[in-house]
Amino acid sequence: MHEKLIILDFGSQTTQLIGRRLRELNMYCEIVPYNRFPKDAHDVKGVILSGSPYSVNDESAFKADLSEIRGKYPVLGICYGAQFLAYTSGGKVESGDSREYGRANLGSINNNDPLLKGIDAGSQVWMSHGDTITVLPTSFNIIASTSDVPAAAFKIEDEQTWGVQFHPEVFHTTDGTKLLDNFLNICGCAKDWTPASFIESTVAELKQQLGDDKVILALSGGVDSSVTAVLLNKAIGKNLTCIFVDHGLLRKNEFEKVMDNYEHLGLNVIGVNAKDKFYAELKGVKDPEKKRKIIGKGFIDVFDQEAKKLTGIKWLGQGTIYPDVIESLSITGTVIKSHHNVGGLPDTMKLKLVEPLRLLFKDEVRRVGNELGMMPNLIKRHPFPGPGLGIRILGDITPEKVEILQNADDIYISLMREWGLYDQIWQAGSILLPVRSVGVMGDERTYEYTIALRAVTSTDAMTADWAQLPYEFLAKVSNEIINKVKGVNRVVYDISSKPPATIEWE
Image 1 (cartoon, rainbow, N blue to C red):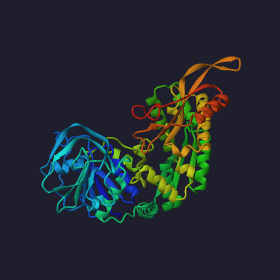
Image 2 (cartoon, helix red, strand yellow):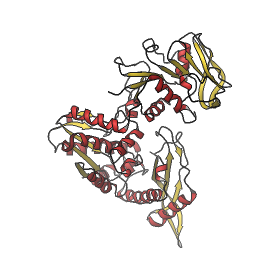
Image 3 (cartoon, helix red, strand yellow):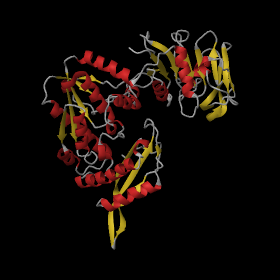
Image 4 (cartoon, helix red, strand yellow):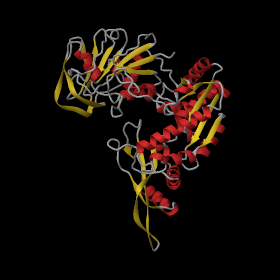
């Protein structure tokens, strides 16, 4: 088992970002609710206390007993975590006259402190808090300040415990990664969590876990399920059977392309053409939630039908990743939502779950895929919704509408690759709007569909900015779609960010 850092989650929106930064430094870490420090912690090298939406003075604030942590492990409190350390040690945390939010600079630094090694005065940090520490306990020594925050960072005497009131995990803190790396060095971490080490240990664990048992896996064409398949195949080979269902709502020629990719990877894949079934069940349905449910249930039905043709299956493989696991628990430790990539299979199947990627973030999945030698078009593929084009066709779904959207989207994505823009974008796609507009083609008036183009930049899909694609590119896409896709006479570009808009339209 790899040595690890524990991140106690007090509810901050950036807690996952702390984890990702540590993983980028090749350090394995786990995010757990603030009150669920692991009992068996012999392999824990250090502890980080996250931020929180609460004030430490709120009655409803999350409070943790740190008596089994402080003095036993190196500890770093971030924002709320730092204030909680001060508050529980007899210090004073008070609401400021205004929120301390945005960029600030460290005016003074104790360069002799190992947490701040290699960080100079003037270094930019990111503040995001309404409270500030006004009185430090006597054993707390200031090691960095800003013009507005005297105790921007502190160290507790005779203890390997530090606190910072800024966020080292965010991009805007210039030396944030350096600070976190310094903390790992304080903890004595080997920092050997790499894609190669993950593959080696995971394959060994899968061989031990599965033995000679047979596994069935639902493939989507996406990076998570594809990497899961390759890892399982590496561990158990012929005992893995994959099922790839074409519900008729994939991108143009995607079923054939993905099946070809899987063949090159040496996977045993059953491809199922279920277009007619899905089109029939979706006929006349306009409500987006109803469409999602029909597609989800239809997929389960097809998967179950195919699974029954096989014998001796004992395990269900799934591409669950670490953000799914984290989001499945509230910070009180209660399950708030389940994550099953296949939408929840019938209990009658009585299969045990195997989830080899449940410890990885999305960017780590891609790095593992690269290490496994998988094709770039599988690894770098944009996220694509499970219901596919079913939620990118607003209103009812017909084969004719699917064809229109497939053709328009194919032009958009192909040109994006051609212009070298695809890898700069987190997610892109085309939307068929349920409205028609007047146009002129030649000497004739037209009354045809509108295509909306969507492209966003993001790191985790929790927030997303609309991508500022070149006007020349958008003009080319619009011209190509209108000229080549029958039924479309207008193309628009969505410049909404998330929040308040979502990435998908339905």
